[in-house]
Amino acid sequence: MFQDSTRCIVIVGAQWGDEGKGKITDVLAEQATLVARYQGGANAGHTVLVGEEEFILHLIPSGALYPSVRCVLGNGVVVDPWTLIDEVEKLEARGIGIRERLLISWRAHLVLPYHRMLDGARENLRGTGRIGTTKRGIGPAYRDKVARAGVRVCDLADLAGCRELIEDGCSAANMLLERWESEERAEPDAILERLSEVSPTILALAGDSGDAIRAELDGDGRVLLEGAQGSLLDVDHGTYPYVTSSNTTAGAAAAGVGIGPTRIDGVLGVVKAYTTRVGNGPLPTELEGEEAERLRRLGAEFGATTGRPRRPGWYDAVVVGHAAAVNGLTALAVTKLDVLDSFDELRLGVAYELDGRRSDRFPDRAPDLARVRPVYETTPGWGVETAGCRSWEELPGAARDYLARIERIARVPIRYVSVGSARDQIVRVPIPRVA
Ligand code: IMP
Image (tube, rainbow, N blue to C red):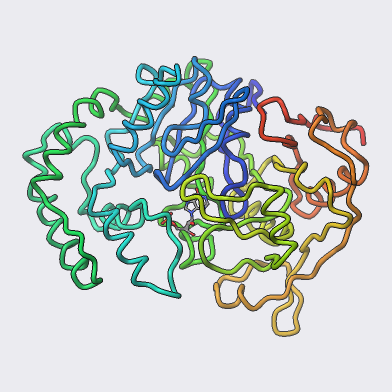
């Protein structure tokens, strides 16, 4: 993807998260000098396999596994300082030094213990109407940010000055926790004490994410802006209210690190060769029973953060079309193609029927999306292993047809096809390609 004229690329999930962004970021990071996260927090779980070793990263960008890549957490990320330090230490324990090349934006908001408590208590209370959040405190932390009641990384330099904010945060949280029948209570002194333990470490890593990225681009650096979750979990463009609490789409990347949108040269959308969703909310092409079990087993579809089983479904071109539009995708990476190797037949959702009318437009209301009936095209499977393929020509004909159909409907060229979790299990698709 990187070229002389393409030096700043956004990577976004074009479905409901878990598309394999970690693996694709890791592949591209080989040519990058800096990788930055621009939104979300430790709700993400990006899995990268290096040799036999598996790494699951929640906050640190997936480029971290290349020793020369600088890693940045932008101002749009919500940072749980204890989770971050734990992740840094775990990487160091496995021989990956990250401290000297990690930068956390001064302006990033902190996820505090009462955010986690509120997230958990609210989810437990919601009963059947629950969102199915990761309970990492993400929603409450963003709510405080927007309500101008958040604590930021830069505030750690003056903890005494944060006391009132944290006392207010605790008393507001405790009222809700009581009402929501939770036994947990937030304690300002305990939080301030715990913050004083981690603040020197966090402050030593803090700086201006925008300055760092602009300097990289003003030189001859190459930058990846790594989205978390997926486009359909975007708070504006996703299946509201069954979404996360940030803008996950590419438009948020510039604001989330502190650069102008004119610095971005391309947007790579990552899609699975089928669909999954974790948590609640409508999923039109969802499979049930044995077929769902089979896809879940073959794709090892269990959440990297919570271990929850993911809900599998056929590829949904309406979803990806929506993601292509709202992100302005310039290229696609299709992951987990190998998971479909043994299927005799594949189904591809190409449109929806709602109240007797066919449409390829993604509905704005979750209740409407829950009522649509997908219109499917059926295509033959390829029945051979693709895990060893390393070029477009090596892929079986039926797999190439399937991919070409995905590409035609999305009107976005495919640049990468992932055929396994290892770093080298990747097909780089040239443009233009021969067949
Ligand atoms: P939250 O982000 O923890 O508030 O969860 C809101 C919704 O986003 C829930 O449906 C979660 O399952 C989903 N979600 C959050 N992070 C991820 C992710 O990294 N992958 C997939 N789904 C996610």
